[in-house]
Image 1: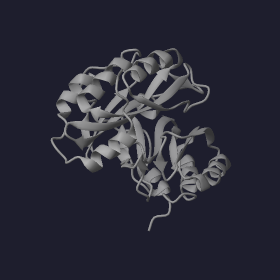
Image 2: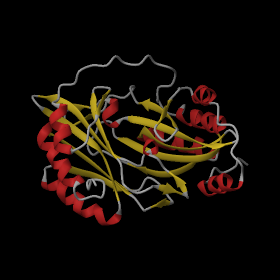
Image 3: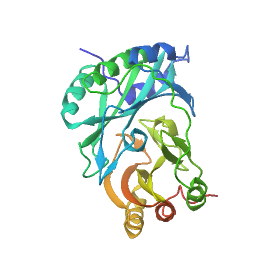
Length: 294
């Protein structure tokens, strides 16, 4: 029987065992079939955009960086072990084959849900976690990903390109600065608390920050999507603020199982004047602890 990669076991190991060698991240990338890079919080993060999919929503063809970006993030736990968390973008026919392979390998499924409404084809989002030898984890994830059409293998980085949006005005409206990635303007907003899952700290690169994405759709307009990371008392104030500003709420759910504080992830969608939408998103951010800068 394959061992189960539980977060509780991960915490016990971290507390009781002395730190030893960090995983060989190049070997992790090779086993996974796609290399990553070190991100903030000393996280090895691998992006797996679904460039094979052509998904449309309300007449907009979604760029992978807007809403189709699978990812996996590995955190070293010493002695070549790691904790991994991730979010896999899957078509509906891919869900059960991928889940079967991952569960058989001892990985945990922590959530399965939609992020979008009306998209064609419909996409589902499977959140995964595990702990153990980093290379073995990567190999297990590779086996699961092979049950989907997720592109693996190395690709040359895309050249930086200008984006047809007034990003300075968006930054000013939101109160946060973003970056261009894959033709999408991406903004991340940290929560003020230390986020933990099963006692382990979950840095921004492992999915604990609010994500706001703008894809230009012409004439100063943008399609927006992403998710707000919220505690329970913030959920309905943020929902009301979004709806009052013409932004559709498309999902509210959890991504983790043992998180503290308990978090809810609210996904959204709109296609309208980019600056108008940025102001609406700021109104929602102001209902959260993330929006209350010291």
